[in-house]
Length: 243
Image 1 (cartoon, rainbow, N blue to C red):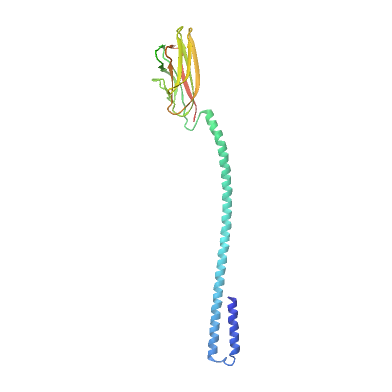
Image 2 (image 1 turned 45 degrees about the vertical axis):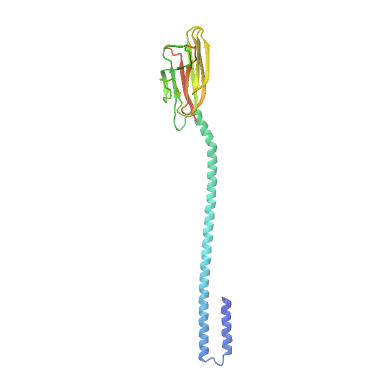
């Protein structure tokens, strides 16, 4: 743009030198006016372009400032993300320890508490020709209500590990004594003994049960039991921890 202005000035000077004789003429005056008008227009255009260029420079400076601020925020976000990842890793490492603690105490957020103990009613049981369910009708403890004194069946309310124990007694000399512990239709424990007077037996097991599993006792075929108010024949169990 400055080159164009210089060129016009040069042309003006040449024109002035060549037309010296006719400088006072009307045509020469008009020509000079047109040149100065054009020069002012060019000057104005150059000024406008300089203003526009300065505006572009200001915009670029503003964008650079915003970019620096954005880079700063991204850096801060990356640092926060790294901190969150570190906290998550710590939490993941602590989670198994927390689970182990809950398992050891047998308490979860559900707060499930299950424990029961029951005994046979006084009387003579067996011998029978077939294996027969034992119904421990005397409820000693039944926290959670999972044991039925009407059927002799314990029904697991939650999935977990359970502890079960039973005792048995017979006082008839020479009569066999045998009881079986069942989980659903599977026999888990068979204990037997030939009676030589007042004979006792007992056993226990830890069973992994799913919700709805049933645990119960049966009197083996051709075997007998005896019970009185001293509570010789018992069936007990409780939840160790839910899973």
